[in-house]
Image 1 (cartoon, rainbow, N blue to C red):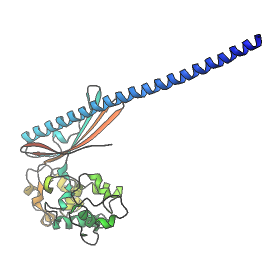
Image 2: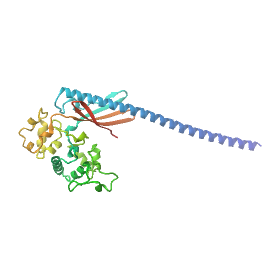
Image 3: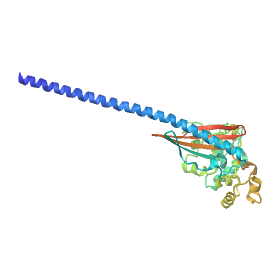
Length: 308
């Protein structure tokens, strides 16, 4: 009887220990799930706060641009909006703002006019620029086909839907919406190529493919050389060194290379601005990019996108 009683106690002890282990495991799992739920809730709260801080940063940038429009008719890289702003705190987060004008580059969307037809002069200039970079100029044909509304290949390098038989998407047949979309165009999937092109080109989703003039006071050397094919690098650097200018005519006076370009596409002011925000709240990093158009009626938001 003593032996049997001892066995029963041993079995009972094993059962109790098993139950304790089971309950401990369940408690640990429950605690872990509770911690994850709490972490998710905290992250969501920080994400909401970061999004609101990004919106506040945009409002601050808009205020800066509106004040600049009242104070000056000229836009150059020495003005407040163009200077690097140091990070600043909002509540428990850190906010960074960077403003860059879109008028320092040539807008790719201007290759196509409001009727969906190529602009011959800009097509010629862009092809010349590609050749100068050592890039196949026929890539411009594929770019035009991506944006024009028809299904007829443009030039020997044209690429309509049949050229994308191995891709899970179709030709957009509309202006580009953002720079990253270029990677979808046949022949533009090389990141290094896009980095080189970004020195002269940008993508601005303008209503009706409206003109975006090149600001001679902020334009990159590459963008200037694109519009003025006979301009050398030394010419561009000399022009940039003498900035800012109060009018286009005086900037181009006595410049031999200016005769081969389009002075009418130049300006001394900017109306397109790219506002980039970077907000940190706890574990959350939130980045956004806004494109705004500044006009007489105020500022119009053309694009808002989150950068992941």
